[in-house]
Image 1 (cartoon, one colour):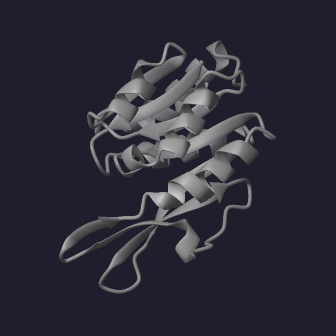
Image 2: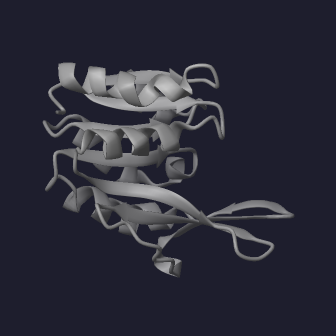
Amino acid sequence: MHLFLTGDIQVGKSTALRRFLKDSGISADGFLTEFDSRGAVRRLYLKRFDTEARRDYNDMRLVAEVGPGGMRPYPEAFDTFGVDCIASAGKRRVILMDELGLIEEDSPLFKEAVLRRLDGGIPVVGVVKMRESPFLDAVRAHPDVEAITVTLENRDGIPALLAERAGRCRVV
């Protein structure tokens, strides 16, 4: 079974997921997205996640720029670096996917890699954007995925809930 958090923007999904991993001591690898907010344009980067996650921003990992004119996506980073992150994950107890969103809709190789991992035996924990799209809908509807909605009211209890569900799913 795979566990994905979903909910409104900035409600605390990634924070709860990372707190769960830290509190439980479960080792994970996979990917995460992170903003570099220096300057007027915010840049969103795809990064490997491991126990020594570090800031490593470069153009091969840039997935979007957000500025006064809106968002400019670079979905090709998912089909290259993102696919590599997924292919090389699985050396630890769980695979982290934080987060799956709309930019990936134009990244066929990445979408295929994600869905293949969901068909596999290594547990996945992640965040999936609460928007409708063929890809995101397929992730949430996957028979081995449990989607948990995070709200302002329940977010402080999400790490404990994940620990309880992870125990039933043999993640721990």
